[in-house]
Length: 198
Image (cartoon, rainbow, N blue to C red; front, side, top):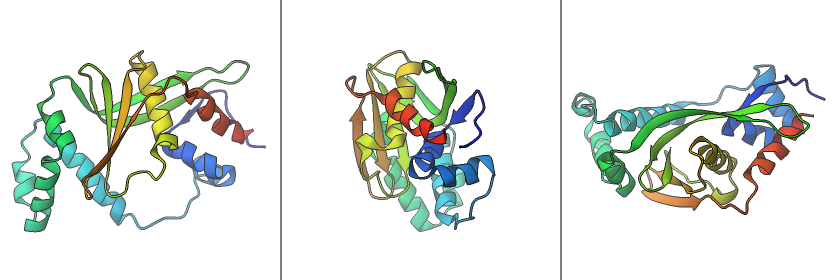
């Protein structure tokens, strides 16, 4: 049995790990022990996220682009021409890199929080969340923990079920959109994972 505090905060990544293994979750998030992995792919992803953040906020990115080699510049130009990026660039009602913190209070259980950061959101007629993937899209996107957390969090944050999440592979130019489904109990699925700590 793991020690749990009265208020805990969970991200989609921590819930994915907890769903896979409570032991690994405990080592990483309670004991701060985990194996270091090659982070070159992670750094590439962070750099792409940062560039898109500046670009979609209409900052001048010319100096960044001029410092790139020809292959990287060509790759960035392909990303700029993705339909979702062009749509977001021209949309006024949007948020880029928006953090969230949602309080959850289940009946007869301790409260907890869901936290994360939406890569981008457009708010025109519908709440559309965009999530950049450097390479691969989730294998089972409808049931992916990130999908469940993001759709639930956005539905609470904006007080609407008119929400969708679109995963976009920046390198493969692929995307998939998942709409909020009222029949699916997002909270129940999240709480089932958290119960693994007991």
